[in-house]
Every structure is written in structure tokens, then in C-alpha cells.
Amino acid sequence: MNQVFYNESDRIVWEEDLEDFIPYKIFDAHVHFWDDSFLPLKDPQRNNFVNSDLQITERWNKQMFPGRDFDYLVFGMPLANVDIKANNEFVVSELAGKPNSRKNRLVTPECKTEDIYNDVVKYNFVGMKPYRQFSTTGDINQCRIQDFLTHPQMELANEMGLFITLHLSRYHGCADEQNLIDLEEYTTKKYPNIKWILAHCARSFTYWPLQKAINRLRQIPNIWYDISAVSDVMAQYTLLSKEDHRRILYGSDNFTANAFHGRYVAMGRFWYQIGTPEYAKKNNIHTNSKPILAIYEQLLAFKHAAQLAQLRTEQINDVFYNNAKKLFDLKSM
Image (cartoon, rainbow, N blue to C red; front, side, top):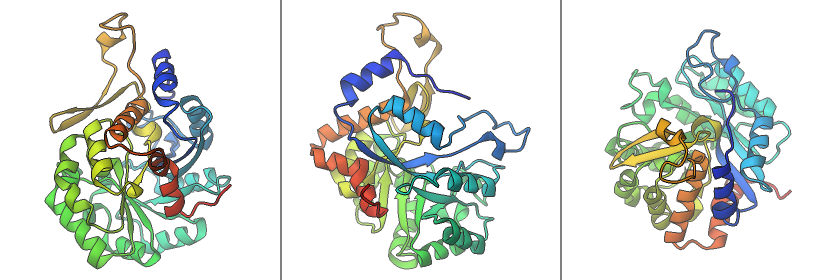
């Protein structure tokens, strides 16, 4: 997957539905930088994702978000067999000229805490990016947080006051009882200095997980959410209407999850990433419009949820930038 295309339907939705809504300063709290060279030469995962560095990301954002000014929270790509060291160093080099952008160190359970500490000190990583793909149980679907982020790593993050961008595992995501118990224990007892960013609306791609979990999540200290890749209006509405909006961050998951024409479709409590079906590629099937980029689907969902939740303009600006400015101590430029 080497490139992404921008079509006429994308342009129309931006100009007519999004341009007047999206603020001019944006902090994207969920960005992957990546190159296929970080995988073994014959790895079948090669070419599955768009290679993305700062130049590619900024060029693409200029097309998708004309006139907007971006900074980022960046991490590597959590794939099996990835060269962790090379990907982390790539992120460091790419962000050298972006003083208001931040970076998390990609970690696996095999990463030594001494190496993580040294990288945080040397390269100014502000946090860690673990992933369920690296679970020591071998079960990426039902593993606990401690299965892909070790307790010694969490102890280090606690000592250093680091962020952890967390993609929850287990079938029910944030609604899973074990996940909730673990988060409550980690934030209030074991690791009170870790700042957790729960990716993808706490991995609530449908209405149900957040609907079930929000009353407990909102009581948990030191957690924030990014809204990346969630195109379900009710999931975003639940977050905006039930949580403190100051704990919500804009995120895109850029080329990893949102650079296709389609969306994350909820079917009851089931959800799946669905691109443009073959029949929709034909002309004049119900409409002359074409599917739009998934990132625009996410933004439309957020816009509609914000309208339902009656967010004020300044609150929308907070989600897109001001919350991150305070959280990451960004300087006025």
C-alpha cells in the first residue's frame, strides 16, 4: 500500500461539512511513523501500510486539512517482527525539527527497563507505546494489560511520570471487567504517576463498551482518551456527554487505520473496518457520491456527536489542541 488517493467526494465533504468546523490549530495525539525497511525483507506484512514520515504526513495533512497547523504525538508501528530500535530512532530523527511535537517509545515485553530509561533521557520520549500484538500469552484478543506491558515497565513509567498510549485488548475493550479492575488498581494504587491515554475512545468502536463503562472510567484518575479511528456517533457522543471534555484528545491513527475510503462500521456490538465495496465503485449506485476517507468519517462522527452534546466552540478547540497543549506543556509559537 504505497499511496492514498483524494477524490471529489472527499473534497466536497471537507468544503461543505468540515472546513468551518475543524479548528486551525490541531494536535494529533495518535500518529505512527513507519517504513517497510523495519521489517525483515520477506515479511508478509511489508506493503500493508503506507510508509509515513514527517514529510509525507505533513504533505497529506495539507491536502486533507488545508490551512491547518499540526503538531503530533508520534510512535512507531507495533507489528510482529518489527525492528523496535530502528523504528524508535526513525521517530526521533523525524521529529527533530518539531519542538512542539512529542513522541512515545515503542515497547515490547522484551524491552529492558534500563534501555527504555536511557532512551527517555537521551531522546526525550514522553511515554511508551505498548501493543497487544506483543502479548506474552500469545493471545492478542484476550490478553490483559500486564501481558504486553510488564510491571517493571509500568514501575519505570510511574517513576518517570510517563504517558502510556494504550490500545486495550479483550473482546469488550473498556467494558471488560478485568480491564476496568486493572486500570482502577494501576491508577489509584500501584502506578499513580502514569498518565494513560486510552486509544480509540477507550477502544469503543461501537456504542456499547463506553455506554457500559463510562460511569466507572470517569471516576478513574490520570486517564485521557484519543478519538482516533472511531466513526460511530454514539461512542463519541457518550464520551463527549458523560466525560470531562478536558480529558479528550483528537487523534487520527493517520495512515495506519484511516487512510482508506470506507469506515469502521458498527453492526450492533460487532465492528469492522470496511473499505469501498466493488459495487460502490460503479457509477450512479443510489447516488453519484463516492465513499470518503475514513478520517473524514471519524471527523463527521465527532462533529455530529459534538452537536448532540452541545459542545461550545471553545470546547471543540480544547479537544483538537488546548487539552494537548496543557497536557504536554506545549509552548506558544
